[in-house]
Image (cartoon, rainbow, N blue to C red; front, side, top):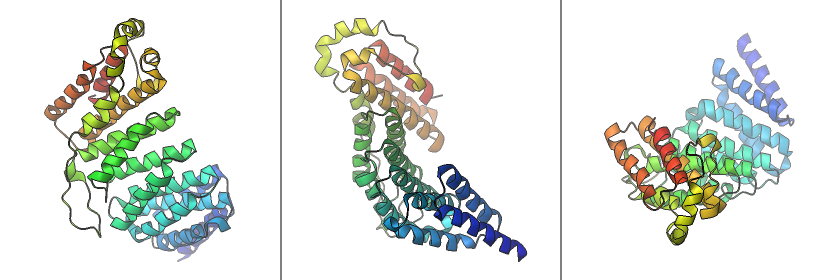
Length: 344
């Protein structure tokens, strides 16, 4: 009993620190400490703590931005550790996220989406259909188009979280729209944003190719999951060769420029200067992003969905098929990188 009393005092002290407006490093440590205290001690207090944090966040604009960010980060950590135990609160949490995304401070909007991602991953696809539908709607309507790059990155990671938990409440129509937006986001001016959406694109495509892994959440009518046909061609192969045909008359001139470029290329420091002459800087960024998506897709198919090597060979042929309209050194380097990294 004395241990429980000490636990409550620790929780109260951490909660007070968060709602008083602790700055980012402190609120991160306080949020993790709160979760660890409950995890190691009496777990029953998770319900009251989650409820009190939701009540505080529901006030929204009545509170200072730093205070709101601290409470959101702590609630997100609780979902990360205890998501399956507080499933009933996810629908309310998604409504809170919608309110927090109206804040002018970008760090509040970022923390709101981080909280949503933790709630999605912590729930493991077991929450209600309404909660997932609202969460997806918020991400696509508000998060992915935010003016702040940190918020757009957080939104992309939420989409990847949807893929990781089986895409609950996402039908083929929602998946198609989401995939199309991810491809569009690969032309974002910020590299970190492009990389985040490239990873989301690969993860979502892998889910779309595995109907058995698609989750049907509670509260939704029975629907037979379907495999997305032609998804790889539409969202990976075609965008990679985008603009090549219309510029084919310039191929010979550009090939001379391509041949001067180094063949060895890595994803961490890829730079395709020849493509700026041939397809423009946006084309270069798009093709690098598509290549990263291919790698994420192949790794998910192999490591997450455990497809046999014999089946993965067909994907290798599709990757190499992207060279049919462009045999430049740089295109070959990207395709080689996809094969070496994706099938490693």
